Amino acid sequence: MQRGYFLQAVLAIATLYGCLAPAECLYESQIRAFLEAFRMRMCHPIPNMGLPALDPFILGPGQTSMNNKYLIDFTGSIEDFQLHGVSDFEVTQLTLNPVPGLKSTIQINFPHTYFQSLYTAKGSLAYIMNLAGDGNAEASIKDFSFLISFRLRTLSPLGITSLQIELYLGDLKINFDNLLEEERINDFVHALVNELGVELLDDIWSYEQGTVVTKVQTLLNNFLGQYSLQDILQIIAGGGGEGGESKPIFEGVEPDCKLESNSSNQD
Image (cartoon, rainbow, N blue to C red; front, side, top):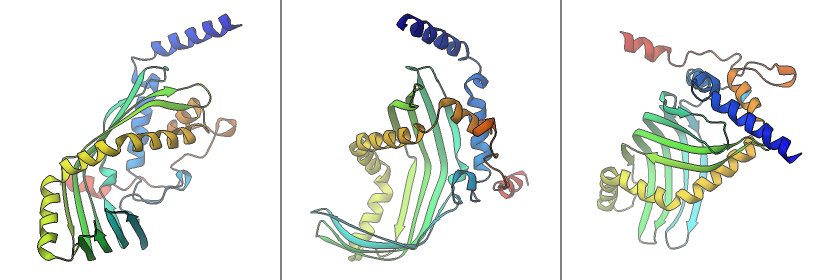
């Protein structure tokens, strides 16, 4: 019995290895087409994916609070938060290997994203600098990209292992009106972040990377565990569901989110 399973596994792996050369065999072209179709619709809600409009991504009004002893203690709010540029993403690398043990990679770049919001922030930093935030909040990020690598676990339940996430950031600029009570300190902190923001975020990511990666892998496996590999590929290719048929995932959503920018680029 065990020998029979072993031979089946060898044949399955040999078949998959035979598919490694053409991108179509690994559905890479379908994934790229899916992402392009998704990008063209991100300014609209996509009901079949349960998504709101994502570009601009709008939040608020909302409130939050944090009390991290000896570091930060504040209450804050946001209103009219809008994040722009998410749909300008570029897939710069994509390799999908369904063979267990082989690494898959995807790299996505966001050339320019920025957000605008009204905000408040009251509290203190380390009980030394008082927060007095009240007004406009703006931030601009250039050439933000992430490189994800993982190994696919195709046996039930479907999942991933050996997840790695690398982040890259070209530039960061912020402006938060009246963030700190003391004007000179406020100006200094803004100048420091705008000059060294990339390095500061690199340090923060290096410190938090392990925790974040573990949580992301758990969330992804909880989601993927509901499907088979074939289910996922059929969803991307536009099929699937009971009886081999389902509603097209972008049904009723026009692919017109980039028409204005495309026409302006051609003028």
